[in-house]
Image (cartoon, rainbow, N blue to C red; front, side, top):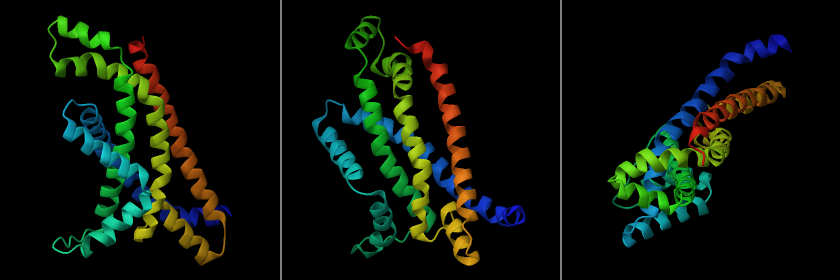
Length: 218
């Protein structure tokens, strides 16, 4: 078994690299988009607020796999649009669009949990809205939303396996190909170890961040 694992490791590590790319691009792009959506969601401008609500409802109310398929296969079929995206671009757009909606609701809950007195106090001190959000509200929000953000991040790690429907050679697709080719379930075990290691590392990083921001806890 050891020799077989050594033999398949390069292929599986390559697949893990594809999954990691999907993961990191999604995190980097969806977090700031989620914050922006959250701010629009709680804004006083009714039209923008309703649009943000509708977008979040759509993204959270439909399966991520369906969104991936629509972007890759559906967009080229829309008359007058006919946009043909590659598999990687389609996956990134779908993941970012989906997870930004989930992150937006998490950030919205965090922002609304802050005592209104802090907004009023900062206004008395001469802080602008931007300064209030950046220096007073967001540090506390980050502390409060880290646990749910951590859960979504770990879910994202596992959701990257959905890109197999686009025939991308991610970890899960490579694993299934090896199992079918060699009629051996060992690749499943190796993939499970990879996912567990990644989850462990993410959990440790999130725990560190929670301690780092504990200074802002009320």
